Amino acid sequence: MTAEASVIEVELESDLKNVEVAEEITRRVSGTVGFSEDDQHKIDMAVHESVINAIWHGNKNDPGKHVWLRFQMFSDRLEIRIRDQGNGYDPSKLPDPLAEENLLNVSGRGIFLLRTFMDEFRVEGIAGGGTEVILVKRINSNNSAQSRRNEP
Amino acid sequence: MSMKATLRQVDSIIVIDMSGRITLGEGCTQLRELVREQLGKGKKELLLNLADITYIDSSGIGELVSAFTTVSNQGGQLKLLNLTKKVHDLLQITKLYTVFDVHDDEAKAIGTFGKAAGA
Ligand SMILES: Nc1ncnc2c1ncn2[C@@H]1O[C@H](COP(=O)(O)OP(=O)(O)O)[C@@H](O)[C@H]1O
Ligand SMILES: [Mg+2]
Image (tube, rainbow over all chains, first blue to last red; front, side, top):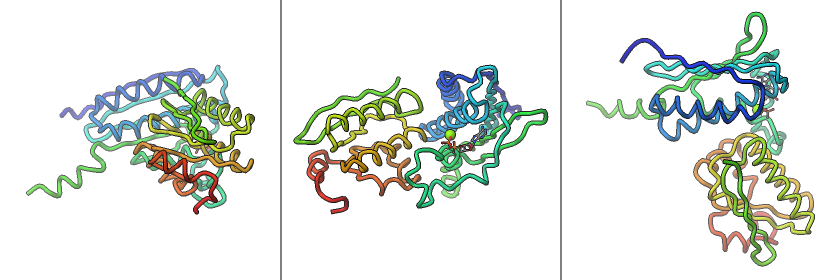
């Protein structure tokens, strides 16, 4: 009911062990916000993939570089920002994992999956260096329109 | 927390009952080694029972694809059994559902080995 959004911020070292830490926090947050079990799994997976990318592709596994996770809860949505200290990338230039010639590739499905699972996905360069992935999941994004239609 | 696998043999087929997570790190490594080990023993007919797999990430999907192509390239067959809804949906949206031979009845799945794919 309050207009003010609550924020949770975490700083993680670039160690794949911290992927589980990120997941743990994500599960708590998405549970608190009241997402369905199905949506919680989607959010969980989107953060999982993004944190791995931040550590792996962004920070190149450099333990001296960090990843910042920021959860902002609004009344209608959850906004998650994953920031790394890498040079970024253009998500519109990635090969399509559904293309016939890519179907049997062993990698390249992370961004595709989180795009499918979240309502919004953006990549932004940070002034002064670094990259931020912004993920948004709306509350009842699948069901609310349906239930509202049934109201008198 | 991670992945567990139990192996049993039905006729000439190795059924691998898997539980937990197939995700980057341990889960993926375990799957890779398991498949390599079976191929090393000359076991080329593998049925992965994914009934108790709770979580597969993009790396896990890649590992399944890799297992599938490795086994196929050696003239073997790797098939999937008992997908949960989550895993089913994941294979559906990545268009891999039709690449893999997926079953939900173990006895029937066993019966399809040795026959040409799609037969
Ligand atoms: N945080 C990041 N920083 C730099 N490049 C990235 C980042 N995330 C993703 N990428 C680039 O996008 C590509 C696709 O990512 P993804 O879909 O997760 O597939 P994968 O991680 O399996 O390569 C990566 O291979 C990488 O080149
Ligand atoms: Mg990735």
